Length: 220
Image 1 (cartoon, rainbow, N blue to C red):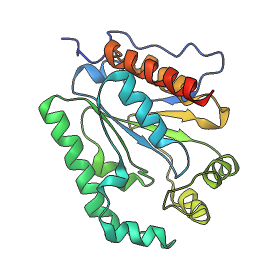
Image 2: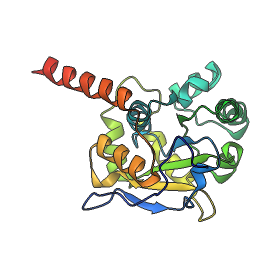
Image 3: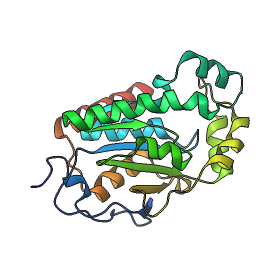
Image 4: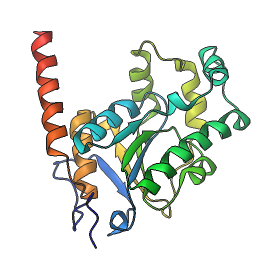
């Protein structure tokens, strides 16, 4: 039986230069379980923006990893102190529980999480989960991160994140997006949806388009 969340056939994106540079999602994988997309990568790669575009276009539940951090973790990062694994496990457990609850209830969703190490991804991995890795080189992401305001991740911590990042293995169900191509986040999100053969929520997408147009008019 086909999943109501995916089309029968997955196919590559239509972009001249595809943003998806790695795809290990088996054919029919999303027909067997409720999908939850975990948007991962180092700070500054665009996880929140991708999450918003995917969630809005698909009409799925969305969650931000930062919202699962206890205050002690936020205070540490605000002072430029890297988190230890001991700090991270309760945070990862909370994200795991959010994913498991959605899959159990048959409610698809998208959630951000840096998920830099394989052991962290193993904690989140379950049938239906697809990791969407937003990948880029250090210089391009440092440039993006230096322009951000109101975020507790300090630019000087980026190098340690790149050092920590463990590449996804071929046995890990994932797509990799090359954010260094500087495509718009909307196009990147559309290519993820297209590659996975997911079905957009027409009403949710119409609301998103209306909202984006209203923002453009407001800027003029």
